[in-house]
Image (cartoon, rainbow, N blue to C red; front, side):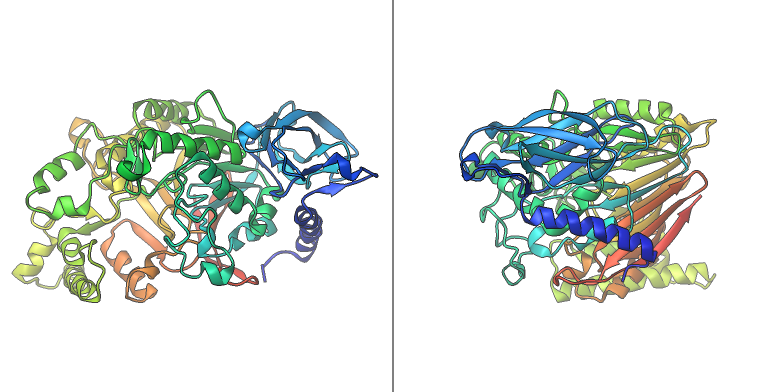
Length: 577
């Protein structure tokens, strides 16, 4: 059971039962409408997102019950009460065939820091009712955020979503991989048939209609409906909204000889994303980075580390192959290598300098902290070989390194081999995940120096949120010292903290390493200097409670994503001051 106050839990469940009952029916009908009216169905519920102090995006999907390909005109309403006795904003919007029968509206003229209820209707046909809220202005004392990532439909149920709603989260943050692009027999689909969660369509996503269908399937999930109806969402994409390990001009999971031009596939994916997500769409669908100020309490900067500016990833095979090693090292260390791109970097610099929040929070996709392993370990592990023999060799290399590290810490004499293992000129360190910021080390160093300069003379705290790995992490973010000679940060200067959310349902390290999760954790904690805590095997989400004095991070884990019933509990808590 969730550790919630009895009255709060009861009140919430009353609201959710009423909402989900309506959702299950695809909306409601009052009065005596004729069958000839072919009223709209709202089978994917409602959602809200991108809240500002005076505005919020409202979303739904509506199609005539006879499935005819005609526009569906709707009225939207916002009220200060669930019974809609006090409607404070309303207007017209149309669910068009050209947008996959989705409808979005930017409801403006609202009051800051206020809870609202909203719905869509056509004559006597009404959508489910959703609850949303606007952001506070100056003087806010607390905000409660639920942070999600990596919700994979065939891998399991989205219990993390409904649990966050039950715990009273005010705003949902989704850091990417809201959907996955794989075919029905692809990644994490082994139990899909047994769970009744096979991917739709069955093929890998390529076309606009493919991506629309997959978004629709994910929106049909009952836990997703509850969460979206309970709170606004602020979301960014990662790679799987397009294709695995995407970068600016391609992706690991895209073959242009079979799947056509990358730009066409990306455009289709982004169009479907903007149609199906409650996001404020600007003049360009490609620009998703944006900021949200929770009064002067916290400023949230949502970044795109995936599509708009990222250079192609460097692979371990290139770095460990003597024939390509030098060129790969030069690419990795290049001062011009980009993760965000120039335009986004300039924008972020301005926002860090001007935004009012004490807590400066980066909502982005991949790990920013230095998750570095010695090359001796990486070579033995061989990321391209996950066999038991290869992992045994990796374990031996890890043991040798940790033994040498422990002996040095205890001031015990080292053998010549152990001395060499700890000498970074002979055994340099390299990030284990080069798709993360470890693969863009100079770009990260520039960002950290930029943040410190922007915060100079002001009470500011940097917190970087991440998803992507499907595991939970807490780490110190430190400078590498690349710019120290130019007056930048010295090596190992602490700049901020990283809080990374586990996957909603996607499996993590435990799914492809043969060693127990506790041993995985022990290895990472022993090898990675900046790592403070991790969980290598559980699914769930990150719950943040932010006040002026502190930011509390609670990692909430669900008991089982393969069963309908579940329990949830806090697995770790950290207070940042």
